[in-house]
Length: 125
Image (cartoon, rainbow, N blue to C red; front, side):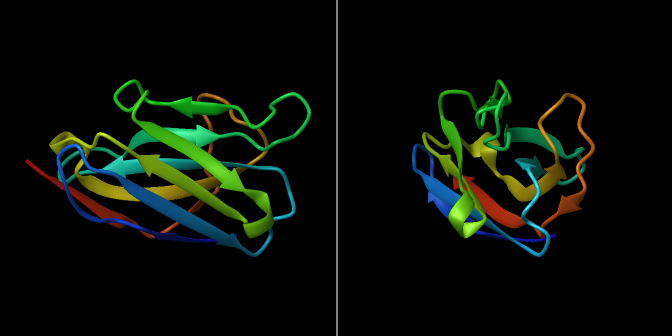
């Protein structure tokens, strides 16, 4: 699976951005998709994930406490694309954002099988 992230940019505090991650390759298996972010000198941190829309998961979504109520993850299975709508952005949201994919349903912890390249999000104060 290849992942291509896009949509990053520069925005003012309180603004919005929508990140996209297009998947290609072996995409016919149920796959959990996620977003992570990383700033220099810090470990990559979990932002959000969405489970595959199969029987018992129903496309459940998961969020880090720091983004709950502000970020929304969604997926378009027909386009093999996952989105991260980011509203009410804060300077502390500034980071390189990465999308990731894992076969199967979501669990914590979860072994992420594939990673996309990062997209820079910068929130100015």
